[in-house]
Image (cartoon, rainbow, N blue to C red):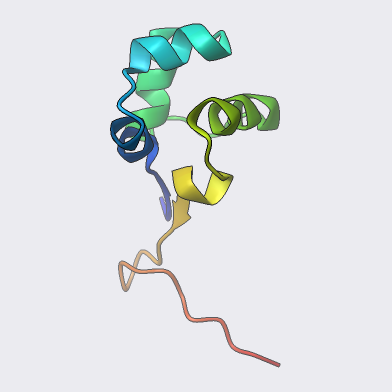
Length: 79
């Protein structure tokens, strides 16, 4: 999947454990683990907003698009 979840990176930067994040935003540790591993097909915007508020970050700090062929974000053509 071309969407990469960098939640583990943000948790490390904030020196926070998954358990603490789960408690603060009201979801299970298992769901945080699934998010970190990228094994989810979607995330609710309200959950994403709570994560961003708790970690003091932007959605783009957590979610990243990578071109599956090149392994990097695509270069956008300007019109």
